[in-house]
Image 1 (cartoon, rainbow, N blue to C red):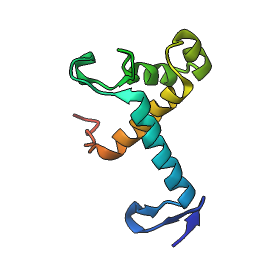
Image 2 (cartoon, one colour; image 1 turned 30 degrees about the vertical axis):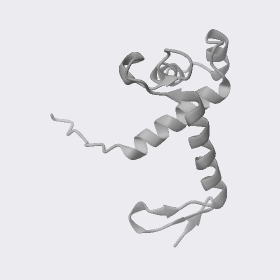
Image 3 (tube, rainbow, N blue to C red; image 1 turned 135 degrees about the vertical axis):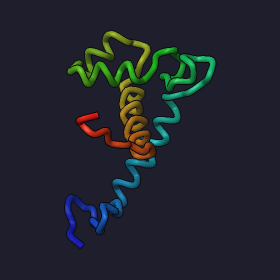
Image 4 (spheres, rainbow, N blue to C red; image 1 turned 180 degrees about the vertical axis):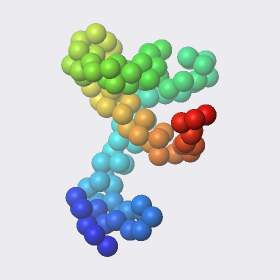
Length: 107
C-alpha cells in the first residue's frame, strides 16, 4: 500500500492513522467535550460554547466568510481560542458521522 504523509492508504479509502494523528484526534475529542455543550433548553439543543448561548455554527460561518480567529476572539471575549478550535473538531467529527446524499444538479 502506498504511504503518504505518515498514513498507509488501503483500497476503498480506508486508512490507518499514525500514532501522532490518533493522539491529536483523542485530544480534540477531550477539548471538544470541555468547550461544547448541547442542551434542549439552550438554542433548541444546537451545540453551543460552554457557558454561553452562542451556537458554534455562528463562529464557523464567520470563519467561512474570511474572518480571522483573532478578530473573532476580540469581538467575542467570552470565547477562548481552544473553544473555537474545538468547534472545528466538532464539525469534523459531525461530517465523518453523517451520511451525505448527493443531489443531482438537474433536481
